[in-house]
Length: 126
Image 1 (spheres, rainbow, N blue to C red):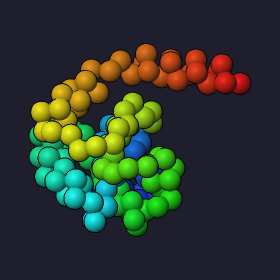
Image 2 (image 1 turned 90 degrees about the horizontal axis):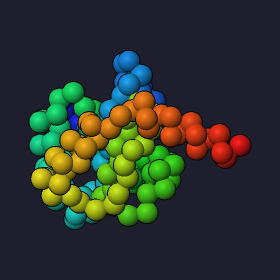
Image 3 (image 1 turned 180 degrees about the vertical axis):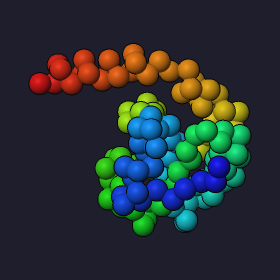
Image 4 (image 1 turned 90 degrees about the vertical axis):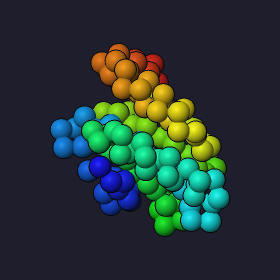
């Protein structure tokens, strides 16, 4: 699967996926960012190895509102959203082996447990 450009206009559609169970890796980047350009081929190769996952890129210059919503303070930043829950977010370019391992860990998450944890957090916030 090729990488999709993520914008505020297509965000909900891309992140939720066709069945509401979207699994999305998001690369927050900018054209002027050297580490972003170095990470781009690693991200693209991961997308080719994992066609069942949506790989999306957010140009933080063009999509400042979306970058602000994710509180992006440095780039590149990688975020993983599964079933509407952000399960990972970290700045910095990752080596290919680390990205592959991270994807494997995200695949193994028990999403029923994650959703239960989110619900418990929301209940204590109210």
